[in-house]
Length: 241
Image (cartoon, rainbow, N blue to C red):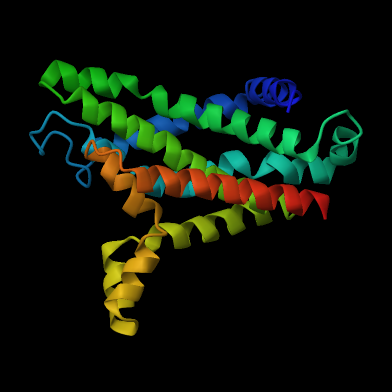
């Protein structure tokens, strides 16, 4: 575990050695703000000093942006042949997996936190509930971690970044739509309501919405942390097989 920090530092700083990271950050902020102010978001029309119209699009934005950030984590190492070189160093597979994941998670968390001007704007326009804003940011960071866990796993299974991206989007889409009201209604036509409810509990949306309402429910924390832990465990298994 002592080698997690060097791997983290190498990976995190590596993001900023290419213009791709800056394009990602600008793109994320542009699309997230544009959606909030669009007619779909209705930021001003809501007449409420909150960021719920801003965070409501995060599960859909992350569906594409997180796989774009995470698809290269292991697939690029495999394609370039540096994976074998990496494991000749005195580090364990778990060290490498944790270091890479935490670096990517920190990068995504930075993207989320850079939206702080939106919170300042809301404070200027009204009197927001800062507790709700803070829990919303916490939920967004955990949401990013959940998506990223899935993406690191798919990246470890292939050396093709495009395949990793498509597989990540597909897997994450399932975990999003399980909590989408229209999809849940369809499931209730095919399965008993209790089964549909159980499936909905595996959705990102179900567990993220509580944070945007200012609620920190232990079961939501357990969901995201368990998902991250489980996917990282499978990531280690996939690399050691």
